[in-house]
Image (cartoon, rainbow, N blue to C red; front, top):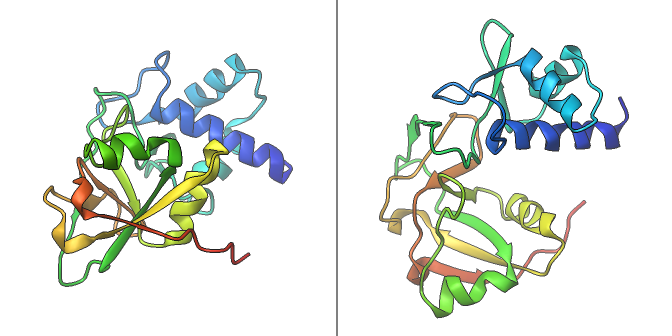
Length: 192
């Protein structure tokens, strides 16, 4: 499978495991690989179980987790389905957590975030996503093809529980970031 097709497959799987309303995820977000292949076909994406396995397995995309028996997959984060309960198993330890976390958003969101002082809210997702690396946040923010704002957030000041779904994840989740904790910083130049 070419790189472009792999990127398209990863995005399609992410949509299915995070947002699709026509599949039946279990209460913690698992879906059989065969159901993923079937749902991909609905979107005219031809893939085999092996293709999906390469994307969600240990050498694949870090957005996904493969079940121990290798028959099911789930997204680590980003769900909009309120019936999926994702535990934050690695709650933040202020002694070992990064000093700052980063969140990028299209600039057209700044009015709601800063001027109306709503801060960062999950919107249609279950959690606000923050990254340890500012460039990772920038990469996510650029997916909407709009100018972005990058925020630096002091981790220790966050009022809500903050955690990760996996100790290996560089994505931290919380339910709310007050606008007073958001420091807009310059978007770093791409290093690659």
